[in-house]
Amino acid sequence: MKEKISNNIQIKNKRATFDYELLDTFTAGIVLTGTEIKSIRLGKASLVDTFCIVEKGELWVKNMYVAEYFYGTYNNHTARRDRKLLLTKKELRKIETAARNNGFTIIPTRLFINDKGLAKVVVAIAKGKKEYDKRDSIKERDDRREMDRAFKR
Image (tube, rainbow, N blue to C red; front, side, top):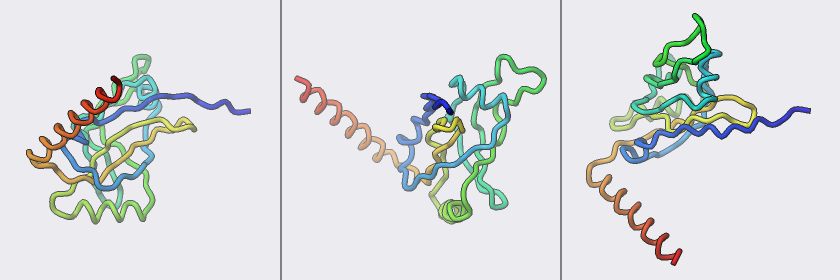
């Protein structure tokens, strides 16, 4: 019998929800080499300053940091290389049409390992927030925190 792999790897892009208004999300597979998946399983990856582009009908994640594997030899990967994301054609078309519109961008928000042990990336179509929208987000977060404190008493 197969044993379930219990991985609690959840690498999040915390700046994404602050800087962007997330409109639609998609879960995509990611093409990795052997040492990259080992580093991700150790939690040595980051989605800071990461973005996605559509090239020739394929979705690529740019500037994603995956640390070099400590035990890797000459086969070790480069830390910030372009990685291909795997989506269905229907999802790719939807993302591509949204990305062509002015003011919209594609950003990865979360990197995780699913039940089967495969690395997945949650990609969002997002629209940039203005400064006053960010202030509203901060105010809502503070209000929610105050309400939680009041209910605990």
